[in-house]
Image 1 (tube, rainbow, N blue to C red):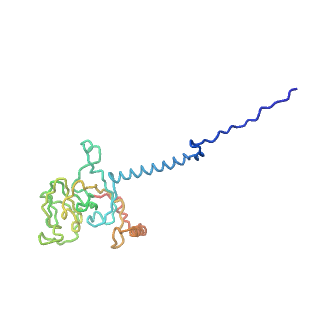
Image 2 (cartoon, rainbow, N blue to C red; image 1 turned 90 degrees about the horizontal axis):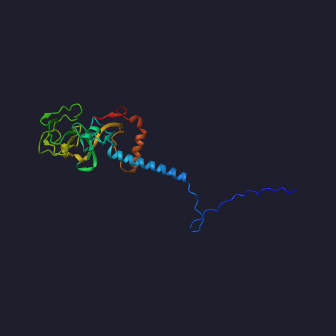
Length: 263
């Protein structure tokens, strides 16, 4: 009887590790899953930043009211949203019919670059269009020779009427002004608080390319405590302002003005 034979045991073949072309040890394996995860978050962050920058530049931007020139319509501490798309350029008439764009109209509350300091933003109501003739007679607004019914939004805090006199240096155009014809490509803007507003009666009309947009909503209104400034300078001042807002958020927020439409 021939002896029983068994097949040789199977020995797995282990391939040699890869060797770099320069003969050195191979590089450690790359975690492609972790790299892809990080890349996805980075791409999402970049897209969000690009979208936010685009929206802030061309669509909507938030502003804060620092002065009382628009009282009682807009109060100090109101945080508003400004539509920057509505006055955008439209090359064709079809764009005006399909897109929510239009020209500046009388009565629009607009945000614009201050003509005497373009790095500062002002907010006023558009009163006169190019070619309009503006005149103020004893606090009454005259537009193209006709009195304007503006009692619904204007506010006078001083009953005294400053007379028209060349000898007055301060506020001599507050209650008596003009007549003044708005030049082409410009807009005449005034504050609703007519007795306490630095506006076109003082520094002239606003160029069209200085207009940033139209205010359309108060999204939050905060009544600052006491006579403190609206903006504290410096980093320490910012921290103090944030702490004040946090401490008095519920008690000083004007809740009745939240999401109020600006007219």
